[in-house]
Amino acid sequence: MDLFEYNMSRQFNETAPLAARMRPESLEDFVGQEHILSKGKMLYNVIKADKLGSIILYGPPGTGKTTLARVIANTTSRKFEQLNATTSGIKDIKDVVQKAKENAGMYNIGTILFIDEIHRFNKAQQDALLPHVENGTVTLIGATTENPYFEVNNALVSRSYVFELRPLNRDDLKKIIYRAVEDKDRGFGNMDIDISDEAVSFIAEVSNGDARRALNAIELAVLSSDPDENGRIKIDMALAQECIQKRALNYDRDGDNHYDTISAFIKSMRGSDPDAALYYLAKMIYAGEDPKFIARRIVICASEDVGNADPHALQVAVSAAQAVNMIGMPESRIILAQAVTYIACAPKSNSSIMGIEHAMADVKKVTVSGVPAHLRDAHYSGAAKMDHGVGYKYAHDYPGHYVKQQYLPDELVGNIYYEPSENGVEKKISESLRRLRGK
Image (cartoon, rainbow, N blue to C red):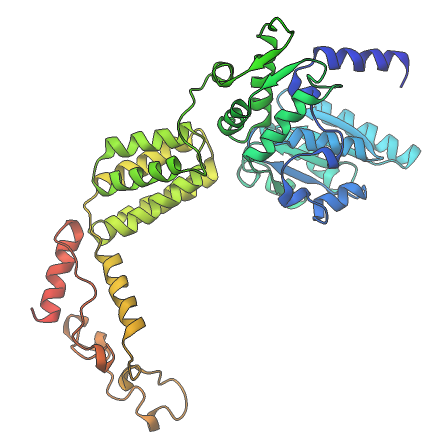
């Protein structure tokens, strides 16, 4: 490093935002994403061996996409070029490709091209890049917050490994926060800072897996606070709430309030109170609850508490869960709200769950001689000799596609497990079953 580079580096550390200064420079310093970056994982191995092929990094903001690209830049012996899709065009792509060809031809050095927000490239720009990725002139690292299978050229995706980066968990964020407070070279380690564990936990909780958001809150807390008479800056819960512009809720994802809230949420939907259900939904979203967890509870409620009273409820809930997985927050709150209000307002029935519970109880306690002989499999040689399938009546051969015959084992004949309610669609089901059962 010459004097100019040294001065630029020092100026960067003094003026750059904390989130930029605290970017790790090696894989060993990288926090989170163990599912793809722990030792022994494929991505970790190819980065360490400098054998990286084209990849697309996909995940929400603040999860480390750009940081990982910088780590690769520090690790590789290849040339590293960077473009941002919001400000770059086809000419910029051509310039990088030309440099890559020169480096390959003159020095036998490959080139890695990092494109941030690659989903913002239009089709023409992506098409201009494709042949150079395909022939290996450049190794692509694309970063996007959007699902690449929907937003990136299929040909580019097919020539790349796609790695999904997940929101950082609270422990990861707490580690990043403490590192920023203690780091003397890039963080605030040269200042006397007293930050409460409560404040750290709160910032980690409400940052929604976004390291940049957590670090911005810490930086604002430090820079906006005056030291006390002892020169110490104190960051408590009140200051943390002010800096991240969010009120602390009594909601711990591992504590009683979490379970109390989800219980009230489900019971409100079951009790046909859409207003209460929306309130508890809003509380969970505000507190940073995983929207996929919420969606799963809605799916269960749709089947357990609505069931066949409105069969569409399960379709709505499952569609919502799939959409949440596809869209992500904050827009997913709209999808969740639609599903919640539909389930809450739908006619209710727990007949399905009661039916399976009663049937499970009989499975556990009643010993049966077996499946009735006329229902047993008859699709093999010799079945008829054992009377398997003999006497079975094929329902579609009879009027109304129904014929009365025994289906339950002998020991359970007459047992009724499914008793539909008189609500919604189940009222018609109930009438039909009464006719079929002869009641």
